[in-house]
Image (cartoon, rainbow, N blue to C red):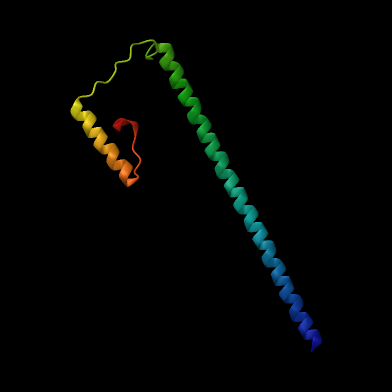
Length: 103
């Protein structure tokens, strides 16, 4: 009877060890998949950055930049100012965030 119990215990230990080994493998597989996704995203981001740099340099070389040009200041009517103040007050009360266009 003790041989049967030890045999059962050994088989349970083997199945537990196999389960732990499978979990380790699955975690490694998940980590490898995550690393592949990061590499793909990095490659895509680098390509986008290169493209953006090329567009910016083309813009600069073509003379289409606004550097050195006078900047027109935006004039607001008293109604616009009052409206923006109301919007800001409501946003402050409700805790909402709002962008620069309302300032």
